[in-house]
Length: 489
Picture: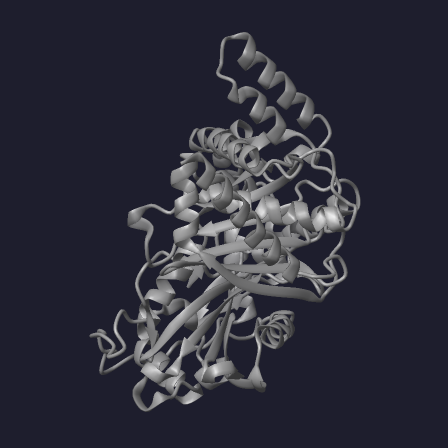
């Protein structure tokens, strides 16, 4: 048995009939490179059967402690059925991107079955040009971005002919039966004395980084503390980033996508040239991440202007950060932190928007580097497991109905620069599908692959009338920066 961390459990606690804790990847594959030119459910099932012993999380099943007395556990599922997790579907051929997106948003908008391991894989046929899509859903309580990439690294190969894979043991012991409720109750009772100790150990870390926790700026008094902190830094000769830090702690403005979310999603996806992004980075002396966040800021700005809803103040984004150490690879679960960063959506000049983004991110990284890597885990340790689920949902709901703690999520994940193959079929693109919650109804996640950056836009269907417009805005923002860069040469 393996107990969830307090942070892992929060991804379960936040779930409701409208909010889902799973993430997904939409991989587009070219089956012409596969044996027989085919990629279907049978091929994917065989691949997983051959490699499942290398992927323990795919067999884990959730077991709760009665009355919520302690954090839940993962156990090997004694009734594991691989066929349940692999499904095939199709869109009317030749299906275009929008038809595929409609299928993805319907599939993504269904919660995972907590009575089984928390993942599903959909093989989607009917795409234009004979391509095949694989939509992989997995719960965030099982993996974060880095450990999710570790799973992909096991399933995908660098060559269409495959690679050597350590064979599964000739003899494997069957998983033991699920523990009985009375056994879990006894385990939970034994764990109660550890809970105050866990909170006390987390106290110094949480106090030191309290103002940097997501949503802290929405609590009474925190913005004032931030102003005082910045003033002290300036008084004692700190650098100009003190002002930027104060902006970071400011309350975000209200936008159309900052209210309670519905149970339905909108999804759009597309790619831009990584070479173009790198060229802009060189022209302006910034980083690739600076450029990607600037493209997102420009896209959101255009979307809001078209709807006469652009606030005067900059929007505030949450940017996830991995704090997983090298020796924690293969540990699964979540090792993440988050930066709260303003993005200059109120800046009309593209070059100045990039410069300000660079300064905001530089300051946020400096602040983030001084924080303990365990901040999020330590902060969640203060909530007793018995009330954690109710507290998580109520807190998010209350904040979403007042003024949002932040406006959107932007995530940029670097990926491989060379081709990957699934059962011999070449992966053409890899689009992320991520999470939205009450108060934060827009998520823009970007994953680089080969010579492209693949965007996945997830929004609430009632708040976002057109998710594809964000992709058009990002492409327009990149073109603007390229044109300005040419004049600087």
